[in-house]
Each structure stands twice: as structure tokens, then as C-alpha cells.
Length: 392
Image 1 (cartoon, rainbow, N blue to C red):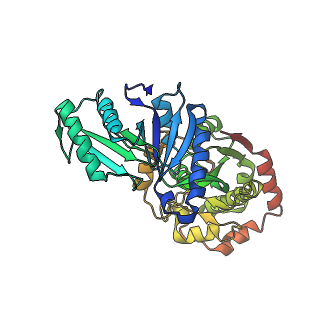
Image 2 (image 1 turned 60 degrees about the vertical axis):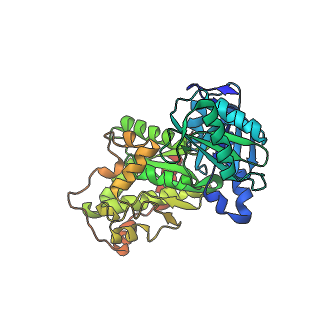
Image 3 (image 1 turned 90 degrees about the horizontal axis):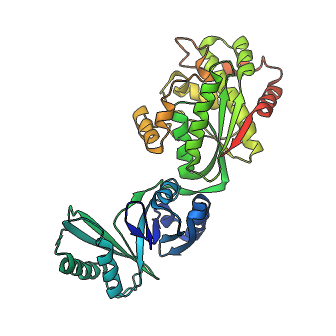
């Protein structure tokens, strides 16, 4: 067994999923994908992995610590929760001894045994296991068994090979494991919404490529530092994260020449989608992702979203479309982007905007503005070529 930093013993980590269990004949494929991703995230922290009756058991290396393992597993899409556990044989006398030893380092006055049979062929049912182990704990420690509100809940999970004893569920991302074949490109600003939108797609099993548009003349260093920090935080939720920082200043100046102020934001966004589309094709991505929430700001009214997306040649995901700001901010706190996003900055969309932007637009209006550009493809190509790419 391995002694962790908080003096709790564990010799394995029991990983649980939820949605994967509903995948029927495809379940094995998702399990294998999750194991592959855990191997990459844990690296030298783990020595082996084993699938057993709806759970995955991770065996840590001798030098690995609880905190490092927890930090990695708490950010792996596909994992619902996990527990640091000790392993016993399936012999009930051995299980009882392990439970007694496990509780030796714990402080508690009341307890509950919570047994779960993943292997239904085990000779005792869950209630019988609870009664047997509960009686043994009372005899040794003289503590009171309590079904509701106990100080200590001891989980006993019976699998086909072993029995696992633990006392906590550590929450992870949930959702589905990252599939590198499901690439999307997400437009990333420095605000609250787009990082959350990117995370939501990671949680649904997509590998998310991040694209940020930068105005070089406006606090470029501070903005870039903020974007890099957001990208690094998001990178914790997937195996590989690619960030494009696209210079937008020259294109922005051209747009200012041709578009009146109250509709300019929509033209910006259309060009951002065009550039992101090119990056998506270069990376074999099949969808674009935006942080739009319906009617949250002027550019996201019902009509303006239609006008913006109408000519996009690739499908667009808007995972936040029905969420309000409070819901989005709550998620940003959970995933660790809130404190970064709240830092002051100015992105390229925030400059030269009117006090009263247009709330209703029509595709023909933007089509007319775009028709004044004789070299749209060249401008897009140039922006992509000058983009700086970092991989985390």
C-alpha cells in the first residue's frame, strides 16, 4: 500500500463513469478511449489499468501521491467520480479485516457501510454484506452504526476479481472521453463565455482547438498573457490543446473603412468565422464553436445571430445558447477560468464600437459590405499564415 499526503492508505483508484454505461454495444469502445486518455494524463503516476464490471481500476506507481493523481483525474472527460481505495480479496474474512484496518486511521463516532455488488454472482447480497461488516466494526471500535448522517461512510465495492474499500467520491468532469477524431475549432476571447463554451465541447468528447483574434496595438502583451493563461487552464481538460493567436488589426482596419459603426461587430464576427473555418479545415475539424448566449448582447440577438451564421460554410455549435450569465459564470468558477476571465483586458471586438449597436440586421446588408472586399480569400489566407500556434 501507499501512504498519501493526508495519511490515508490507498493502493488503487476506482474510477466510475456514467454516460458510457448507457452506450450498449459501443460501451467497450468508450471504455478503451477513456483508459487511453487516463494513461496519457497520468503518465508515470500510474503503472496499470484494469476494467472490471462497470468500473476502471488504476494502479498508481510507488512514487505517486494522492494530490497529483486527484488533480489529473478530476479533469478527465468521461470520468464521473473516483475514489482512492484499498483492495481486498473476495473472501469476507479478508474484506472485514481490510475494513477494520482502513478505519484505524479515521476519526469517527458514527458510521455506515455502503456495499455495492458490481458482480451479482457474489454469494452475499449488498444487505448481507452491510450487516456482516457493520457488526464487525461495532465489535472492534464500539461505534454506532447510523444509516443517515453518519460521520464515516465506508464504501465496499465487489467486483469480479477484488473488493475495493474507500470512503469518498471525488467528482470529475463527467460526459464522454475525448476522441481525437472529433475535432472542433472554438473562437476564444478573454471573457467568461467562450472558455466555458470550449469546456462544454471538451466534456462532450471533442478535441477543441482554440483560436483567438488579437489587435496588436491594444495592450497586446496583457491580452495575450490572459489568453495563454485561459488556454493553459482549459488544456487540463484534454490531452492535447492547440492555440492559434491570429493578428486581426489589418483586417479590422479594412472593415472599419467599409462598414458603418452600428453593424461593424457583425462584420468582424463573420470574418472571424471565415478565418476559423480555414483553420478548421487545416486541422480536419468539422465544427466551429462560439460562446453565444441568445440575446445576451447586441450581436447575439435572434436576428443578428442568423445574419452572422447565415453564410458560414461549416456547422456552428453554440453550447451556451440557452444559458444565462449566472449559469455561465458558475461553470467558469468550477473549471478555474473565472479568476482569469475577470481580469481587465480589451479584445479586438471591443474597439471602435458604437454606443448603440444595431439589434436587427439582414444577411443582404452584410453580403453587401463583404462584396466591397475584392480579396477576401487572400486576407483570410494571410491571417492564417501569420497566426502563431502553441501546443499545450
